[in-house]
Image (cartoon, rainbow, N blue to C red; front, side, top):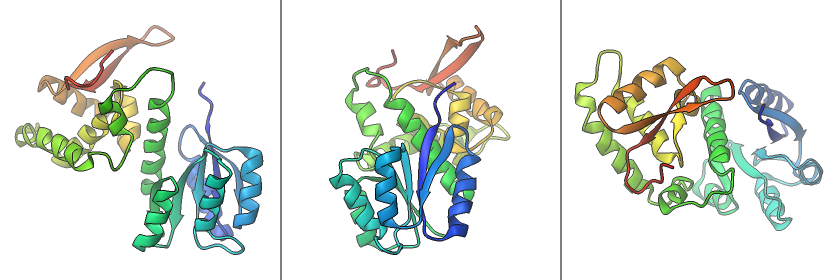
Length: 244
């Protein structure tokens, strides 16, 4: 069993904090291990608890979220941060991104939006685990800024080349989401991982992946798990991606 991803919530509103806690713990492989209601308390506890991920509010008493994220970086804490806030101005967004926030969610938000953020984070953690060397394609996939327009154009063009003849029950938007998810992956993924990554049913993901394989947009290989059952894994066909 994989170790759960430890989440620390910084939120001064007790009701919102509890909602966030319940949302996080509905998602597999995530557990809330701590919380704080103001910035000073947060910095002290994070140094002691060393969580993997912080959900950070901005408008708080004593020390606000912008001061907290700067203090955490001064202390060289490597914890990843997702901002959840009512602040929607560009200056605040830029400040948080400059200090290493990996996602930015505006209140009020839905469970599905947080779920998407955590699924993306889980995939990010998996892809950065291990000691294998990375090529440029794989490195670009980890950054929301590197060649983003090129990547978007690439999978949009790929989907438009095949979605004009989609079978009944498949739709263009879901196809684009799956292609975008596959483009971000550094290695092959299963239908279950794809489903988790974009928030759809595994059987639905499998139908789209099988369709992409038939149209020679993905390659599939069989992997055997711990109990010997074969698992289909898929990767986009791209000459620059290391498929080993």
